[in-house]
Amino acid sequence: MLFNKSILVSSLILALASAATTSAAATPKPAAVTGQTGTIIDDKNFCIFLPPKAGGGIAENEDKAVAFCTVPLSGAPKAGILPTGFIQSAHLVKTSNYIQVTGRIDRSKYSLSKNDGGGQYDMKAPVGAKCAGYNYFVELVEPDIQVYCIRCCKNKADCPVNKSTYGCQKVLGGSYA
Image (cartoon, rainbow, N blue to C red):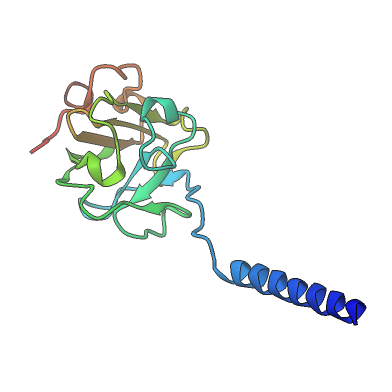
């Protein structure tokens, strides 16, 4: 009888473990955001690069940042969706050589630090990053003053990447209202 109880208990444990494994496997995990292509269509349909995880530092994630868009955009495969309320304003400027969006963010919507002075993303970092339809791009995100700017350019000269500490207003101009 002891032998039969052992088999019964072992079978029960095996069945429970199997059910738990099947249950865990049946619950899909959200796909990691891995998109390295951003795009700007207009002031409502665009992407910016951010740290891959909420709360990450802008400069500390220079090599790891990924694209997040206002809505799903075909030009930005595997990009994430920006949290609701993160973009507070967006102002578009388009010329024959570049397209840019500048504006304000609510850093709390992505858990960015009020002490984060920000940093720059461009064609060199994050590795493999690009702006669909353009050869160059430059983006600055400044959580401390809650502004962002991104410009996608045909010509290198229109996307100054050597001014990362100057801030959005001095690098790209634009409106931050």
